Image: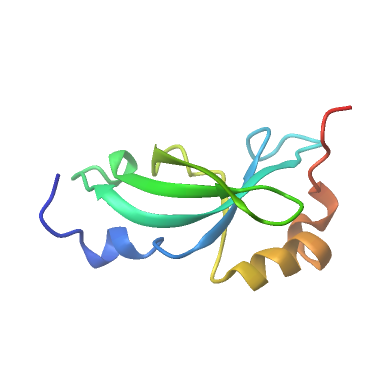
Length: 105
């Protein structure tokens, strides 16, 4: 693990995000998860391998559910937002409003 992560790696820390059930370009793509990037865990020379700790939140109340370490490569299809408020606005009125989460019946 690096002693101090670079400003470049830190740019995602504190950002809210949506993940999706399929990669970009698929018809019928839906929001799957929501959360926040908590920290840089391990920075790599190849930035795609840099690892981040993220927290996921449930849909109804937005309560914390769990954390996971993911690589930048794994986050390449996610939508990032400057704040939770911006993420909620996008979900309700913006870009992802047509891709809302649909729980399994």
